[in-house]
Amino acid sequence: MWMAVQVGKSRGKYDVPAPQNAGPDEFLRTLRGHENTLEGLLIFLPALWMFALTFGDLWAGLIGLFYPLGRVIYAQGYYQAAERRSRGFMIGLVSTAMLLVGSLIGFVLSAATLYL
Image 1 (cartoon, helix red, strand yellow):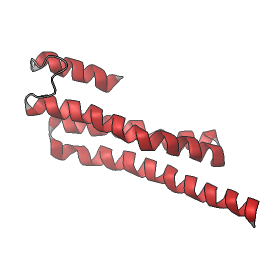
Image 2 (cartoon, rainbow, N blue to C red; image 1 turned 135 degrees about the vertical axis):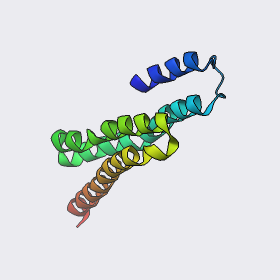
Image 3 (tube, rainbow, N blue to C red; image 1 turned 180 degrees about the horizontal axis):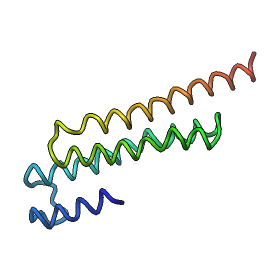
Image 4 (cartoon, helix red, strand yellow; image 1 turned 45 degrees about the horizontal axis):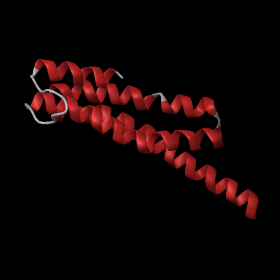
């Protein structure tokens, strides 16, 4: 929600009316930061749910907390300059990767229990 508000503020600041998606680089970085986060949720949320089914809500929640933290750091850096988004991106990526790998391990262990 915070990023959506930032896009709205940026639209006003740079005079880019909705539904236009073209404008100065400063506006585009704000918009892309929000869009990139929404795109990343398509991988993150299923990974979080699958991990929670295998290892429990507590562990999924602890690892999953790093994704929104990373995305806020990503957005704040991206709003300043495209080059400043890397640290936040990596925090979110590592969190998602841990959840995906954990989900895969859980799937393999469950399959082994059922079929071996």
